[in-house]
Image (cartoon, rainbow, N blue to C red; front, side):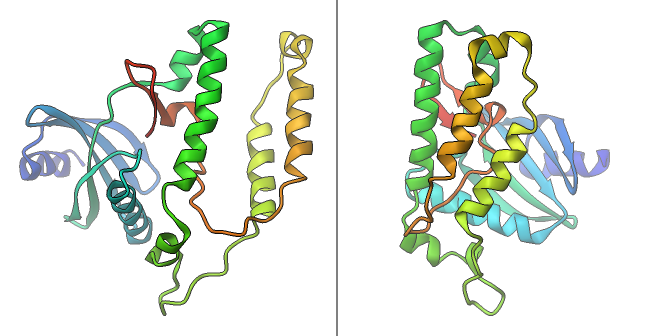
Amino acid sequence: MTDIFDDLATFYDIRDMQLVIRRRGGYVLKGQLANETVYVKLSDNKTPFDKEVELLKAFDESGGITPQLITSNMFNNWYVRLIREIPGVTLDKVLPNASGLERNEIISSTGCLLAEFQKQLNPEKISQMAFWQKNCGSQVDLPLWGDYLKSLLFKWIGRIKFNEHDYQLGLDKAVQSVIHETKQIQEPKTMSILHCDFVGRNILISSDMKLLVC
């Protein structure tokens, strides 16, 4: 893969390009383009590539809060996206060292950020996107919100490992309260985008403490 990375760096005129992570079916690299930091994402599958490109363009057109797509194309049998970096520190690094008041403000802002993200694209815009369409152009059968939310909720909760201090703080009861509240959620009447990887490593905090989706 080193040769391909070198070819990519030459093609896009990227300096100091380094591998960030290798993922199933692709790679993420980081380098310098002119005077800014950029990420180069490679995929071997066209379908997720098309979906990501379409979504990034749609968010950019709406003045969104996602990284800006510089260009996308195919290079040596790889589907490539060149994306501008959003400066900031990830939430999972900031939150543990924040004071009690700061933690409350950050957690509240995180909820508002998720709501802002979900409302960024209106239902009419979403319904016209190829993201939701079958090859014949008809809309796919969307999953029920309640069932999907339940599956994600138990996936996340399954990762929680409570310690004795957590029990003393009543965090286990707080989680059970969240589970109870989700049972009351009804199917939405309009379509919206759901960020299914809204976790600390994907949320950035800028120098002015503004939260940004990554």
